[in-house]
Length: 67
Image (cartoon, rainbow, N blue to C red; front, side, top):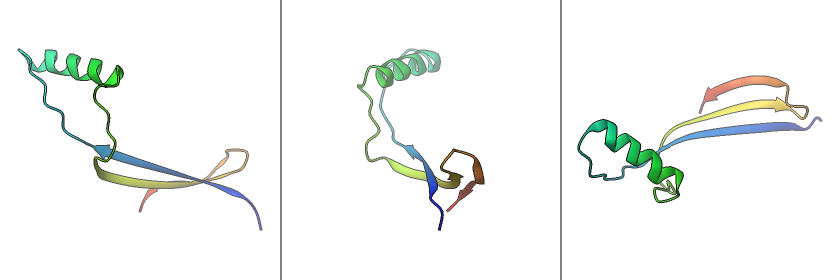
């Protein structure tokens, strides 16, 4: 038997309200609040799951696939 690395990637979504004068300002505020740790996605809704298989030396053996 060989040892493999399983790589799992999830796309998680959550909603956060922001007061702003424009969509651009809302985006800037959202990025700032996310980067400073105010907006934290802890148990949001999983939108997508993917799995890949690598060898121990990180050579990709099976590319990401939805599961």
